[in-house]
Image (cartoon, rainbow, N blue to C red; front, side):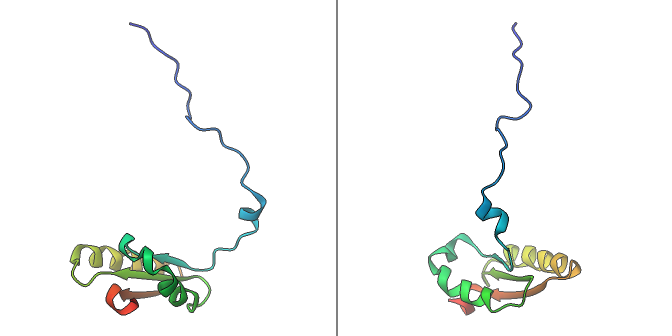
Amino acid sequence: MRYRYKKPFGYRFTNPPKALLNARMDNIAIVPASMLPFKTTWQKTANKLPKRGVLLCHSRKNMRQKKLLERVEEIFKRLGYAVMNLPVEQVV
């Protein structure tokens, strides 16, 4: 049986582009994939949040998703973020 030497990483890490280094990430938006076609709608809501704001969108029908995002909301609040938790139906 032959053993092959495996590289520790399958990828080569390089320096990020200058545009990415200069970018500021002001707000975070966590939305379900079904909301991607309505990006302009929820992006306007996310941009209205104060700096270090977090927008969490969930479906009223999906209780598992709602409970998970409530836990995420608690964590972000502990870290000092301003959090807005909205149902998908209210955003669209």
